[in-house]
Length: 135
Image 1: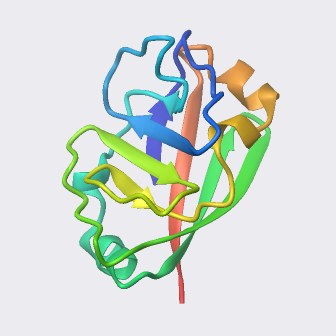
Image 2: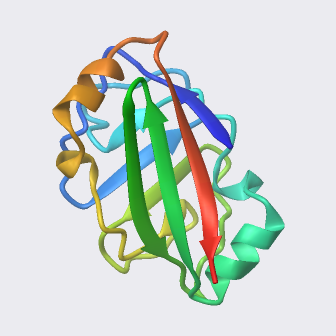
């Protein structure tokens, strides 16, 4: 379970990704970032999960915040490296870099409920992310 928190500059307008970061600060230009102060980054995810994703395996992403629960699907790719020490990016596209956790993800920041983004504009608002392997 990954915990993270909101920030006053959360916009959630990005049309191709959403992102969690361990960083504490967020500028308005970071419109894909939906949560800061995350307890994990791509590099610190469990090895079992990274191995599964490197085989192209699928996962379910459960985001819970207040009364909102989102279930999102994504998949891995053999070129994933999980090297980034601050960010986790979940992409609709097939682009892979050190921050990428999933590709072909079926929801982006812009597609998430606006009520969620409003909640996440409070620095005291917690959001959790559970990543479950789909066999």
